[in-house]
Image (cartoon, rainbow, N blue to C red; front, side, top):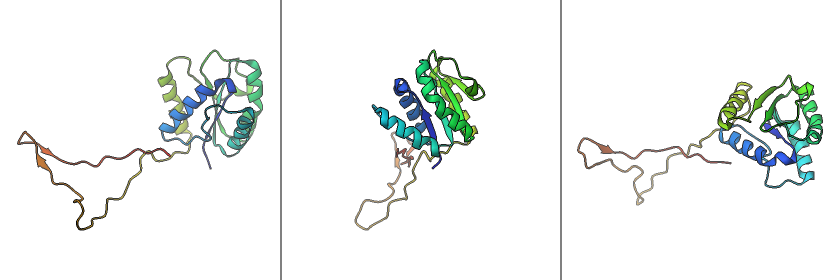
Amino acid sequence: MSHVFVLYAKSDHKFARQLAVQIEQRGIQVWPVPNAAPSPEDLENARVEGLESATHILGILPADDADITDLLPYCEQALAAKKHVLAIVYHQAAPIPDHLKKCRVIDFEGQFLLAFEELSDALKKTKASTRPLTVEHPPPISKPGLMPIRFPSERCWREDRLRVNYTLPIILTE
């Protein structure tokens, strides 16, 4: 299963969850979405499982030097496996390690929406796996005695306008 994996330190959990939800709303597959309060064991298991099958890695650089040394082996593993690695900076982060300087760095310290658009474009250009945003449902089956499938259009209060029933797409989440 190809997907985007968000690699983060425990201190950056809230930002990682917000970022993952925003990416999912754009139709890009993120797995696993960070849950409410991960235990250290759950975080470690998610990192191991997520890195194996991910095609894109978003590494959120933490402010603490100790946290960044914990994330470096995972970043090195992703780079060695020729995965697309993007470094995310959203606060005064620790200095970027040398082997991550060749990765694209997206700076969220300024305006979130501009940085998110840059991230979204980078993921789409590198062909991150997507899912459809809408689900099309087949038209209802006509049965005698039930309401009609289509209601007739009716005149509005202005004679030159017709009120027509439109079918709108429904956006469903998984």
